[in-house]
Image (cartoon, rainbow over all chains, first blue to last red; front, side, top):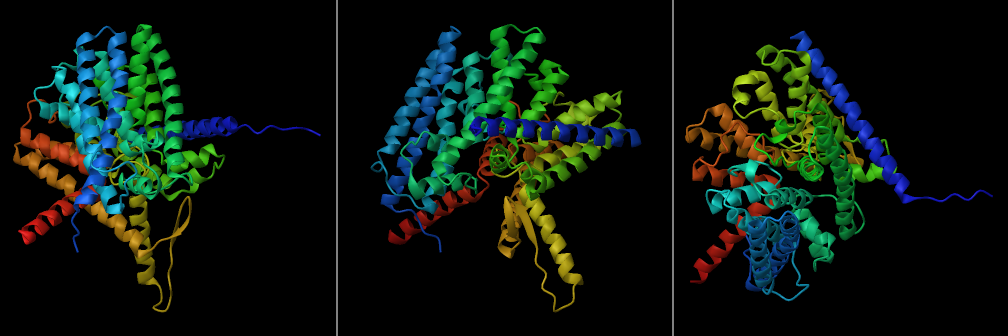
Length: 41
Length: 505
C-alpha cells in the first residue's frame, strides 16, 4: 500500500504560484491592450 | 432614533480604544531597534518617547472599563473610528520629534496617511530622513493595511467573542474567511508575511544588481514591498519609485500591488486549492474589465498627448500608473508636475477614474471597490431586463462572489449608497481645493487620491499648502479608509449625547 502524506505547505505554494501566474498573465494582457491602443492612436 | 452613548458604554469604548492605541507601542519597538542598529541616537530617543506616550495614553484609556468589557455593534464602530484617529495622533509623536516636519499637524498628516495606506506626504528633506523614521512610516502602511483591529486581534489583545467580530466588521471588512475571527486575522497576516518575505527577497536582489550595498538593498526592498503590497505608496526617497529607474523593479512592484488589491477571501480560496474562483468571481471580473478599459484609455491618451517617444515608454509609464492608481498604491515614476503637462486629458482622466474605482473589498485597497461597481452594473442590466420583459414575468438575478448570491434590492442600495458617498466626497474635496486657488483638475485628482487612499499627487500636497486643506485631506483619508459608516456612527453618537445633555440641563 502506498502511503501519501498531505502537506499544507503544498497548497500554499501552489496557491501562491497560481496567483503569480494570474498576475503576470493579466499584466501582459493589459500591456498588449495599451500597446494596441497607442498604435491605433 | 439617535441613541447616545451612556457612561458605562463610554468606559468600554475608552478601554478598547486604549488597548488598540497601546498596541502601537509594541510596533514602535521595530524602528527603535532599527535606530539602535544604525547608530541613529536621536531617532532612537524619538521612538523611546513615542513608546512612552503610546503606552501611557493607551493604558490610561484602557482603565475606563474592566478587561473583557462588553461592546455592542454601535460601540465597535465608535471604537474603530476613534482608534484610527487616536492611533494616528500617537504615531505622529516620533515623526514630529524628527525635525523633518513643519508642525505637529504635518506629522499627524503623514501618520494618518501612513495608517490609511494613502501615501500622501508632507515630510521635508525626505532624502536625509533617518532609517528608523522610514521604517516607522512604512510600518504604518503595514499595520494600517492589515487594519489596526486585525493587527490587535491577531495577538488576541483582550478582544474576544462578538465584540471582536463587531470591531472586525466596523473596520470596513465585511467577510470572515475562517470560522473564527481570530483565525481570520492570523490568516490575513500569514498571506502578508509570505508576500512581504518573497517581495523583500526579490527586490533586495534587484537593488543589489543595480549597485546598492547589501544593507540598503534589503531595507529599500522591504520598504518598497510593504508600500506596494499594502497599497500604501510611501517611499524612502523624494523621487519615489522613479529613484530606481528599473523595469524589473516596476514589474515586481506591480505584481505586489495586484496581490495587495486581491480580496483576502480569494487569496484563501486559491491557497486552499480552488483555482477557479478567481475567474468566476464578480469582483475579480469587474476589476479586470475596469483595468482593461482604462488601459485602452491610458494607451490612447498618452499616444495622442505625444509625451513619450516610443510605444514601450508609453506602456511603461501608462501601465505602471494605472495599476498604481487602481490598486490604491500611489507609487509614481513621474514628477508631480508631469501629470498636468505630460499625461494629456484622456490619460489624466483615466488615472482619476482608476483611483476613484479602487481595488477589491476586504483587501488593503481603497476607493469605491470593484464589487460595488460590478453590483451596480448588474443592477442596471437587471432593470433593463425587467423593463423589456412581459408584465407577468419575474426576473431574478444572481452574482457569484465566493458563492452564488441573489441580487436583492438591499445589496444594490448598499452598493449605490457607498458609491454616492465616495462620489460626493471626491467632488466636495475638489471644490474645496479649487476654492483655495488650485486648478480644478489638479484639485479633483488630489481629492480623489486622498479619499480613495491612493497617494498619487499633482503637487498640491506639500508642506506649504494651506492648513485648512491639510485638515480636509486628513478627514478624507480617514473617512475613505473606514468607508464612512464608522465615522458617521461617531458623529451621530456625539450629537445624540449633546442633545441628551441639553435636554437634561
